[in-house]
Image (cartoon, rainbow, N blue to C red; front, side, top):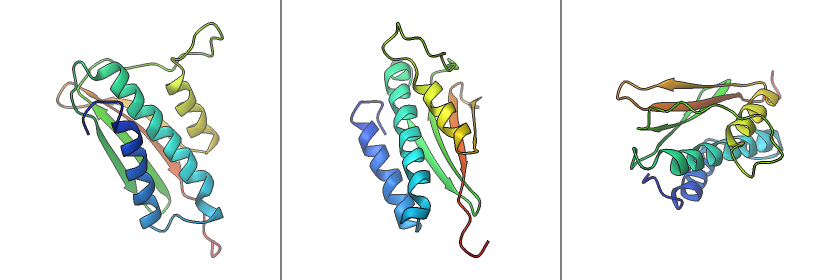
Length: 134
C-alpha cells in the first residue's frame, strides 16, 4: 500500500476480510480478530506517520498457522522505534506500547527486525484459541 493515511483503514479491512475468509468468525475468534485489527491499525499508522518520507510503500503480511496468527508491517525506514512508556504529558507516541501490551496480554510475542534492504519489519504473533475438540 502507499504510505498514506488512507492505507490504514484499507489495510485493516483487508486483514479483517482475510481473517473472516479463513473461518475466524464467531465468539471464539472475536477477541483475536479485534486484537489483530488494533495491532495492524497501529503498525500501519506508525509506518505512515514516521516512515513515509523514506518509504513510499508499506507492506503488510498476514500469516495464518494452526496455532498462531502473525501480522507484520514492513517499511523502508531503518529507524527502529521503541515503545514509549505511558507519559500523560504527551498526546500520542504510545502506539507501539499499545501493540506490545495487547500482544503480551493475548499470550503472543512481538518484535522489530531489520530487513535485507535497509528497512524494518515490525510483527506480532498471537495464539489462535483452541477449538472445542482440544
